Length: 371
Image (cartoon, rainbow, N blue to C red):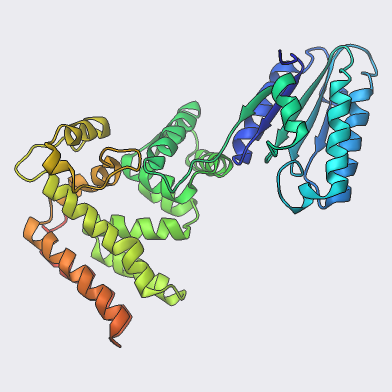
């Protein structure tokens, strides 16, 4: 049975581990004591020898009884030398971790609680196996952005954190924030806190322009922004972003394949799936449910999740905007994507002109955008 005074938080999501450990620390720290009565040890090791020294410092803290009596917490924060990297594999680092394990196994003094938060713990090692049997363990890993549906999980996380701060996101703002902040909990919290300070007490709704102004535009965010500009029929914005990427040395083929083709394909598929049908475009769950109810023949060619079923999220993002594009025009745009890809690979045509021509062709076919 796990000990009631040993806790370990580990995993690839450093921010989530630190946040969970901090909540526990605030909950357990002695009411009558102060922070100076506890030992907080920085576990970020520069090398194997430093890792050994950190382990020894932690052991000393565990073995030192509270000066004024009562209880205390020893928190080894963000330990970086317990995984499978070069520093962690060094003998000196291993020796320190083994000594720490032996100290914990010998038992903690009365009133002493040990908390560990680590960027990773090698599950093959005896230290992890001992913790598994004798400590309360929590694993926090980043979402796998290579798997379908990660955006929905991040969006849920953002809404939850925003609600705690009484912040609301418009749909457009939330979609862009997810693509810019990614799956890292620490980065998400940093950016939400920045937005909270930026908006102040008088305004609590996060708009699209707030995201563009405050959240750094990553490569993934640029790709997403180009796609959203196309979907919203904002050709000028799409061309501006494409030119920015080309001027920074980005490959035209990469822009075409990472942004233009997926966007046009999603618009085409969303429009085709809703042709002669009434698909709900204002609620994701209703939209996904409606797709699942389509006949097998109508679902088979739509993008599929690895685990099975239609990958509805990208189609949901495109469905409402797809109505502004005539179906024959989207079909023609798909053919133009193939021709643009072929031109970039096999001809000496100006790459900027090839991308511009594709954007202009798509925009000219759409209904005029209402301002």
